[in-house]
Image (cartoon, rainbow, N blue to C red):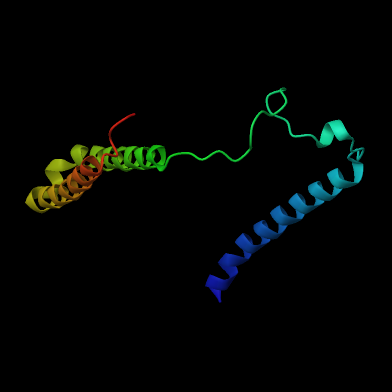
Length: 120
């Protein structure tokens, strides 16, 4: 029963938050001006009329390059705390990090072989 009581404050905070959010949205819906015009309904792009189609195909190359960057950026985030506490881990911690870096190097070799890292 004590566990259920500790969740009561969380539920109460959620109810208060959702109520405040709903009340704010309702009040803004009541008092907002609603005067649509043809100018307001036109698409807006930096103050200029849009040129060309809205749907442009992007090469997946840029997406893959970004994903590889994020993966190795996250690797750096994991390496820093490990390097700070290296002495406390011993040989097992060192072996685990070698496995981690080895898997990432395999991923890098795969991306390199597929040509993802060539900037065109």
